Image (cartoon, rainbow, N blue to C red; front, side, top):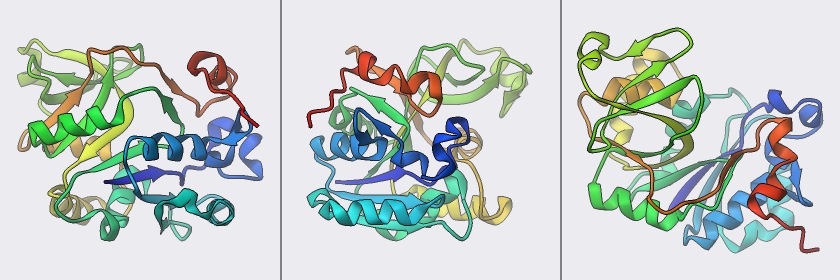
Length: 252
Protein backbone atom coordinates (compact mmCIF):
# COMPACT_ATOMS: atom_id res chain seq x y z
CA UNK A 1 0.00 0.00 0.00
CA UNK A 2 1.10 3.54 -0.76
CA UNK A 3 1.45 6.57 1.50
CA UNK A 4 2.63 10.16 1.24
CA UNK A 5 4.16 11.82 4.30
CA UNK A 6 4.29 15.61 4.31
CA UNK A 7 7.72 16.56 5.65
CA UNK A 8 8.40 19.75 3.68
CA UNK A 9 6.99 22.34 6.08
CA UNK A 10 9.06 25.26 7.37
CA UNK A 11 8.12 24.55 10.99
CA UNK A 12 7.73 28.23 11.86
CA UNK A 13 5.62 27.42 14.93
CA UNK A 14 8.54 25.41 16.33
CA UNK A 15 11.24 28.06 16.05
CA UNK A 16 14.01 28.14 17.24
CA UNK A 17 14.05 24.31 17.07
CA UNK A 18 13.69 24.50 13.28
CA UNK A 19 16.42 27.08 12.77
CA UNK A 20 18.89 24.30 11.97
CA UNK A 21 16.70 21.35 10.98
CA UNK A 22 13.43 20.50 9.24
CA UNK A 23 10.33 20.19 11.40
CA UNK A 24 10.21 16.48 10.59
CA UNK A 25 13.57 15.99 12.33
CA UNK A 26 12.52 17.58 15.64
CA UNK A 27 12.76 14.78 18.21
CA UNK A 28 10.20 13.26 20.55
CA UNK A 29 11.57 10.78 23.07
CA UNK A 30 14.85 10.55 21.19
CA UNK A 31 13.40 9.94 17.73
CA UNK A 32 12.49 12.42 14.98
CA UNK A 33 8.77 12.92 14.51
CA UNK A 34 9.23 11.64 10.95
CA UNK A 35 10.46 8.31 12.29
CA UNK A 36 7.43 8.00 14.57
CA UNK A 37 5.14 8.52 11.58
CA UNK A 38 7.09 6.15 9.32
CA UNK A 39 6.92 3.40 11.93
CA UNK A 40 3.19 3.91 12.50
CA UNK A 41 2.47 3.89 8.77
CA UNK A 42 4.65 0.82 8.15
CA UNK A 43 3.01 -1.07 11.02
CA UNK A 44 -0.35 -0.57 9.30
CA UNK A 45 0.93 -2.23 6.13
CA UNK A 46 2.02 0.75 4.03
CA UNK A 47 5.33 -0.21 2.46
CA UNK A 48 5.62 2.16 -0.52
CA UNK A 49 6.13 5.62 0.97
CA UNK A 50 6.76 8.99 -0.62
CA UNK A 51 8.17 11.80 1.52
CA UNK A 52 8.21 15.40 0.34
CA UNK A 53 11.08 17.67 1.39
CA UNK A 54 11.94 21.38 1.31
CA UNK A 55 13.39 23.05 4.44
CA UNK A 56 16.80 21.41 5.22
CA UNK A 57 15.70 18.61 2.90
CA UNK A 58 19.13 16.98 2.67
CA UNK A 59 18.96 16.20 6.40
CA UNK A 60 15.91 14.03 5.75
CA UNK A 61 17.59 12.27 2.83
CA UNK A 62 20.68 11.57 4.95
CA UNK A 63 18.57 10.34 7.86
CA UNK A 64 16.70 7.88 5.64
CA UNK A 65 19.93 6.61 4.11
CA UNK A 66 21.48 6.05 7.54
CA UNK A 67 18.47 3.92 8.46
CA UNK A 68 18.34 2.01 5.15
CA UNK A 69 14.91 3.56 4.47
CA UNK A 70 13.60 1.51 7.41
CA UNK A 71 13.35 -1.47 5.06
CA UNK A 72 10.68 0.26 2.98
CA UNK A 73 10.40 1.43 -0.60
CA UNK A 74 10.81 5.19 -0.08
CA UNK A 75 10.68 7.94 -2.70
CA UNK A 76 11.67 11.58 -2.25
CA UNK A 77 9.41 14.25 -3.75
CA UNK A 78 11.83 17.16 -3.89
CA UNK A 79 10.25 20.58 -3.32
CA UNK A 80 13.48 22.36 -2.42
CA UNK A 81 13.04 24.60 -5.46
CA UNK A 82 9.55 25.69 -4.39
CA UNK A 83 7.35 24.74 -1.45
CA UNK A 84 4.05 23.68 -3.02
CA UNK A 85 1.65 23.46 -0.05
CA UNK A 86 -0.52 20.37 0.47
CA UNK A 87 -2.45 20.26 -2.80
CA UNK A 88 0.56 21.09 -4.92
CA UNK A 89 2.61 18.61 -2.92
CA UNK A 90 0.22 15.77 -3.65
CA UNK A 91 0.24 16.60 -7.35
CA UNK A 92 4.05 16.86 -7.39
CA UNK A 93 4.26 13.29 -6.04
CA UNK A 94 1.82 11.91 -8.64
CA UNK A 95 4.40 9.67 -10.35
CA UNK A 96 4.64 7.50 -7.21
CA UNK A 97 0.99 7.69 -6.12
CA UNK A 98 -0.91 7.24 -9.37
CA UNK A 99 -2.34 3.88 -10.36
CA UNK A 100 -5.26 1.72 -9.35
CA UNK A 101 -5.11 1.86 -5.54
CA UNK A 102 -5.82 4.60 -3.00
CA UNK A 103 -3.03 6.18 -1.01
CA UNK A 104 -2.73 7.52 2.52
CA UNK A 105 -1.60 11.11 3.15
CA UNK A 106 -0.18 11.79 6.62
CA UNK A 107 1.13 15.06 8.08
CA UNK A 108 4.49 14.55 9.79
CA UNK A 109 3.42 16.67 12.78
CA UNK A 110 0.38 14.53 13.60
CA UNK A 111 0.90 11.70 16.07
CA UNK A 112 -2.04 9.42 16.78
CA UNK A 113 -3.15 5.94 17.71
CA UNK A 114 -5.70 5.86 14.89
CA UNK A 115 -6.15 2.47 13.20
CA UNK A 116 -4.76 3.48 9.82
CA UNK A 117 -5.75 0.23 8.10
CA UNK A 118 -9.37 0.65 9.22
CA UNK A 119 -9.26 4.22 7.90
CA UNK A 120 -7.97 2.96 4.55
CA UNK A 121 -10.58 0.18 4.40
CA UNK A 122 -13.37 2.68 5.12
CA UNK A 123 -12.27 4.71 2.13
CA UNK A 124 -12.18 1.64 -0.12
CA UNK A 125 -15.66 0.59 1.05
CA UNK A 126 -17.20 3.99 0.25
CA UNK A 127 -15.23 4.57 -2.96
CA UNK A 128 -14.96 8.32 -2.36
CA UNK A 129 -12.69 10.67 -4.24
CA UNK A 130 -11.10 11.39 -0.86
CA UNK A 131 -11.75 10.49 2.77
CA UNK A 132 -10.57 12.95 5.41
CA UNK A 133 -10.03 12.32 9.09
CA UNK A 134 -12.23 14.64 11.15
CA UNK A 135 -12.62 15.12 14.88
CA UNK A 136 -15.00 16.90 17.21
CA UNK A 137 -12.46 19.29 18.68
CA UNK A 138 -12.34 23.03 19.20
CA UNK A 139 -10.78 25.15 16.47
CA UNK A 140 -11.68 28.14 14.29
CA UNK A 141 -12.20 26.38 10.97
CA UNK A 142 -14.46 23.38 10.44
CA UNK A 143 -15.53 21.07 7.67
CA UNK A 144 -19.32 20.80 7.38
CA UNK A 145 -20.66 17.24 7.02
CA UNK A 146 -24.17 15.93 6.46
CA UNK A 147 -25.74 12.99 8.31
CA UNK A 148 -24.06 10.58 5.89
CA UNK A 149 -20.65 12.14 6.61
CA UNK A 150 -20.45 13.61 3.15
CA UNK A 151 -18.43 16.83 2.96
CA UNK A 152 -20.73 19.74 2.08
CA UNK A 153 -18.72 22.83 2.96
CA UNK A 154 -16.47 24.74 5.32
CA UNK A 155 -16.87 27.48 7.89
CA UNK A 156 -14.51 29.92 9.57
CA UNK A 157 -16.06 30.60 12.98
CA UNK A 158 -13.84 33.64 13.58
CA UNK A 159 -14.96 35.48 10.43
CA UNK A 160 -18.31 33.82 9.72
CA UNK A 161 -17.15 32.91 6.20
CA UNK A 162 -18.94 29.85 4.74
CA UNK A 163 -18.01 28.05 1.52
CA UNK A 164 -18.87 27.07 -1.14
CA UNK A 165 -22.58 28.12 -1.14
CA UNK A 166 -23.45 30.05 2.05
CA UNK A 167 -27.15 30.44 1.25
CA UNK A 168 -27.69 26.76 0.44
CA UNK A 169 -25.64 25.52 3.39
CA UNK A 170 -27.45 27.80 5.85
CA UNK A 171 -30.64 25.76 5.44
CA UNK A 172 -28.99 22.40 6.06
CA UNK A 173 -28.41 20.59 9.34
CA UNK A 174 -24.67 20.03 9.17
CA UNK A 175 -22.07 18.82 11.64
CA UNK A 176 -18.97 20.91 12.32
CA UNK A 177 -15.85 18.74 12.43
CA UNK A 178 -12.17 19.70 12.58
CA UNK A 179 -9.62 18.30 10.12
CA UNK A 180 -7.26 15.70 11.58
CA UNK A 181 -4.37 16.02 9.11
CA UNK A 182 -4.81 12.58 7.49
CA UNK A 183 -6.52 11.61 4.25
CA UNK A 184 -7.00 8.57 2.04
CA UNK A 185 -7.26 9.58 -1.59
CA UNK A 186 -8.23 7.88 -4.83
CA UNK A 187 -5.84 8.39 -7.76
CA UNK A 188 -8.93 9.57 -9.65
CA UNK A 189 -8.19 12.89 -7.99
CA UNK A 190 -5.18 13.69 -10.17
CA UNK A 191 -6.96 15.01 -13.31
CA UNK A 192 -9.04 17.28 -11.04
CA UNK A 193 -5.90 18.49 -9.26
CA UNK A 194 -4.28 19.22 -12.63
CA UNK A 195 -7.28 21.31 -13.67
CA UNK A 196 -7.27 23.14 -10.32
CA UNK A 197 -3.52 23.82 -10.66
CA UNK A 198 -4.08 25.46 -14.04
CA UNK A 199 -6.50 27.84 -12.33
CA UNK A 200 -4.58 28.43 -9.08
CA UNK A 201 -0.91 28.00 -9.95
CA UNK A 202 1.69 25.48 -8.81
CA UNK A 203 1.28 26.16 -5.08
CA UNK A 204 -2.13 25.47 -3.56
CA UNK A 205 -3.72 23.97 -0.46
CA UNK A 206 -5.82 20.83 -0.61
CA UNK A 207 -8.54 22.23 1.68
CA UNK A 208 -10.01 24.80 -0.75
CA UNK A 209 -9.78 22.16 -3.46
CA UNK A 210 -11.92 19.80 -1.37
CA UNK A 211 -14.41 22.58 -0.68
CA UNK A 212 -14.60 23.43 -4.37
CA UNK A 213 -15.01 19.81 -5.45
CA UNK A 214 -17.41 18.51 -2.79
CA UNK A 215 -20.36 19.79 -4.86
CA UNK A 216 -19.36 17.47 -7.68
CA UNK A 217 -17.61 14.49 -6.08
CA UNK A 218 -18.03 12.30 -3.02
CA UNK A 219 -15.64 13.40 -0.30
CA UNK A 220 -16.19 11.61 3.01
CA UNK A 221 -15.40 12.57 6.56
CA UNK A 222 -14.11 9.77 8.77
CA UNK A 223 -14.60 9.76 12.53
CA UNK A 224 -14.38 6.22 13.90
CA UNK A 225 -16.52 5.04 16.80
CA UNK A 226 -13.47 3.53 18.47
CA UNK A 227 -11.67 6.05 20.65
CA UNK A 228 -8.12 7.01 19.74
CA UNK A 229 -5.55 9.57 20.80
CA UNK A 230 -4.50 12.39 18.51
CA UNK A 231 -2.01 15.23 18.89
CA UNK A 232 -0.75 18.03 16.67
CA UNK A 233 2.91 18.20 17.66
CA UNK A 234 3.77 21.07 15.34
CA UNK A 235 3.83 23.61 18.15
CA UNK A 236 5.99 23.87 21.31
CA UNK A 237 3.24 23.36 23.87
CA UNK A 238 2.18 20.04 22.35
CA UNK A 239 5.69 18.69 21.89
CA UNK A 240 6.00 18.52 25.67
CA UNK A 241 2.71 16.61 25.87
CA UNK A 242 3.49 14.00 23.24
CA UNK A 243 5.16 11.40 25.46
CA UNK A 244 2.57 11.63 28.22
CA UNK A 245 -0.52 11.87 26.04
CA UNK A 246 0.39 9.14 23.57
CA UNK A 247 2.60 6.92 25.69
CA UNK A 248 5.62 7.38 23.44
CA UNK A 249 8.65 5.91 25.12
CA UNK A 250 12.31 6.16 24.24
CA UNK A 251 13.35 2.50 24.16
CA UNK A 252 17.05 3.14 23.73
